[in-house]
Length: 419
Image (cartoon, rainbow, N blue to C red):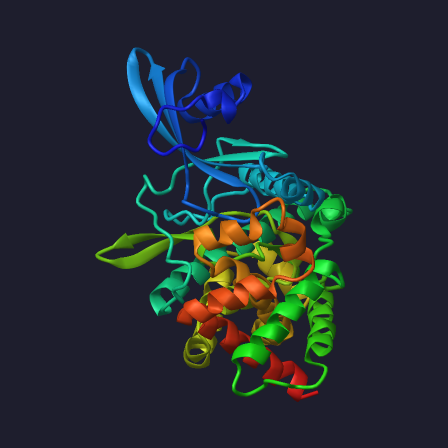
């Protein structure tokens, strides 16, 4: 059975013959033949919330020699129909298919350390990548906040991603395509129904209100707290939009610890690869900067290093722009001062994004699976009321509780008390 650790597994439970042929052709070229294969889950529990995740090893014969292909596979869930229907309705795999199509067109910006990884196969229901673990990449523990070295190499890769896309857009505009508009071309995929006044958002607001009322020594018992948070969450969602007559790029929008993998030299991170593009949007690049900071760093880190991270991002971003893109940004008035203003405009969404998904992603994989991957409770815990199981977990995990309370209190301080 697929998913049984360390046992021979039937590859047909994961791949069709056509998919296997495409994977082998993409990786070793023509003439490769699969002679054996093994499948196991990525984690004992949930490895990610928008699909089923596997590690696959293929033994492939090429010109009489046997080689091993180590794969990471993500596909639509097969045992949780409500979750699969939700993922499909939100176009998560279709968005990721779009980004991997773009990767085929992006020009290399000249840095030997990659910020992304090419796929062997991508479709509306499946993604197959090389297993980066085999290449020496590692992700941080989901509860650990980033220190300065990890934050610096990550923001470097984010800046390179944005610059590469900006150069891609410039190239299309200059190639006699004055009518070119990336957003209009892909608007059907880049409008996300979740980030508006909807049941998921209201359940998120209730959860944060209950967390504060249960654990905060500062803001317990604030009147109309839940309703106030709902209104602020909607305001934050409304801020994530295409900047009219301004600078927009394709943003990742989901830059939490599991979606960033690091390579190390002498125990120090020297490169970060960004993965999992299911939540891409089209807006100001600073939304990625701020969501990354609030999803992965502590308040004390941001107070000490935020300005330095901004400066580093802008330096790397500018360095990787080609001359035509620099001229385009100059014409629309995008400079250091505008970047800083945009960072502040993006901050509210950055905190909201962290408050919306940290209650999920900071859970240990087994608890996450039991809470959010059960078909019987999927609808309730995602779209009605998730507070009870998360508060129970917060009572047992100090780091989980402290990170949620810190984010919640900062949001209230910045956007509720000031109003």
